[in-house]
Image 1 (spheres, rainbow, N blue to C red):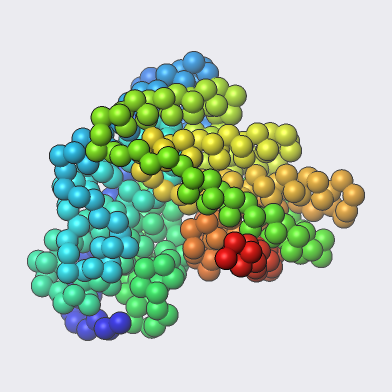
Image 2 (image 1 turned 45 degrees about the vertical axis):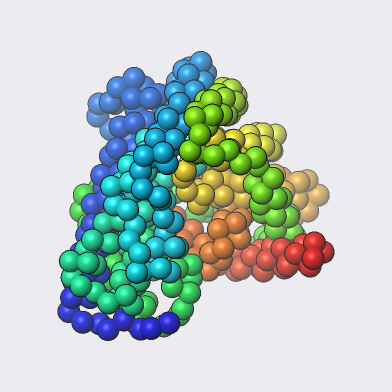
Length: 418
């Protein structure tokens, strides 16, 4: 790959991209919270911020059902309109790989705002793709204004994507690793420097606007967990279950019917699919939104093994239904939730006869490994989860052991299928 020249205008582009990504992160966070409050509370909540989990749990089951049916209508009409009248959407990886082409700015802006609106209304997908795509879309004309070379533009767009991730989750280092591991696919000092400049700038902007937010802060079972020998052995065993779980989910996703977003029938499909999600949410409200609520419950050990299996099945179904409905959104936190529930249930089973381990810590390790395998970001996932929670690096060992076995399980699965 051609290396970019670190000229002053290239550095300026990286800094400006970081600022833009930070501003996007702030704007989308406020928009998301407003939509959540209007949908499940009926208006903006005065005073202190109320978490989405609290909003959803306080809402009547019927209100959740109606909200999800409306969300399905927004999904169907919104993306039908975008695909029917808008310019063709471009995925981030394609924008980076084919830097000579430009991501359509106006269509992408509408597409990303629609993602935030639907996730705020309860769509079971993640919110992180929207700021990543918006940041890349805004970095596209910026690269043109500064007359960057294609090599420079490619790096700027990749860093813009990472900066969007950094802005949403307050994870500058993990986002920089993400850029190298999933987009640029190289481990070279100039690329790392570019990613750190952009992601660091984005996080600085967000911390000025929103404060230094930690997604999973001060969860007692995680902080107090003993990373014992039993935990390490469990991590090896659980790796098999998580590896199989990732493959099973990918298999289910591959078997989904394809419904064209350019045909009006997608509107009917979306309303029906989200109505089913709404019914599931009447018993399992934690499946709504990206999955943070479910993660918090598992990490804090505020759930039974029956509840974990119920949330696993319902979140699994909800994500697949949203995909069939044509909804867009991220998969980071949904993947974390699926892994957390598998690991939590397996740890409960382990504790029946074997040396006791922390259920919350097990869920945390499982969330990391499922995320790493499902999103093809193994190294990023490990850095991401610790930066997201600011927990001890003692978690690295069980994470790595579980990741190795899960990855090996995937490889064996692939060979058996071949």
